[in-house]
Image (cartoon, rainbow, N blue to C red; front, side, top):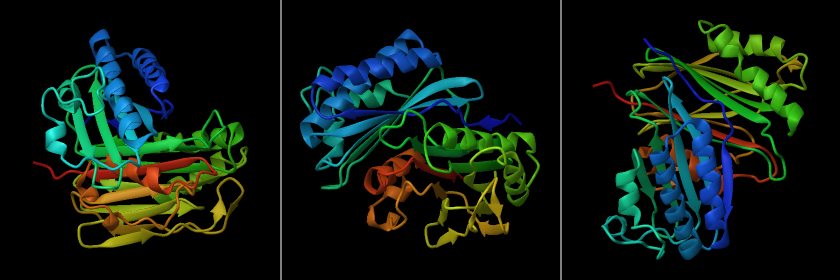
Length: 340
């Protein structure tokens, strides 16, 4: 079966606080679209989407941000757009999707046009809880996948590189996810995290505990990192996990929640113990891993219907509401959809 591997190009964060920044955001998004290989039609669609989303943020929320993440699935490339704000939400989402309704008076033709132009579209906007707008635009239709991935991975404010990194690798029968948080931040932290995410491809058959041990050896020349590794079966019945350091991991099921335990230490320097845990993971469940750039007190139950949304929307909401603001931040959310 063909493999599925996350693309490791950097995610881009664009702040939007006034109308003068709408054009800058559009140009940055279109430049990235061209760089990753989208065609002229898709680049134009990206410009329309950014203009509408950024204008909505300015008008209704005053300020917000747009996150751009390059996508890749079996050599098909795409772009994910996440528009995040803390405004009043959307009172009537269905009305906002009607033709000719441009909720911000922008040059676009409303959110309905964006829904039709994009390859995947989602709005999460509960009353008084802000709005998340998510879109995907692909160079051509991507192949189907049972694995849904959502991720936010951004550097500390003022840094040009992120000291966190993540990867998801595998086949429809088995997926391996790894999140690494290099010690500190900046270039040296990024080198450590990058070294860690290269480990699963070296030994794809190893289980999470073995991969942690290999990371410990590989990271010895670096400043070290906190690392967590999870293995999911493609059918979604079970998983396994091992971690060292302060990567938080949680399994969210419709009726249960389980925190997965990492042991103290810094891979590459101090590792007192590695312990692997098995867990149940039925189709539709969520696996959420995040670095300590995100606070740990969040509760999905406080967000009506969020657990049923795309993992990228979930990652965006958690980042928006619970980022600590003093470190690099990574939120990785995985779901395996039921087969058939």
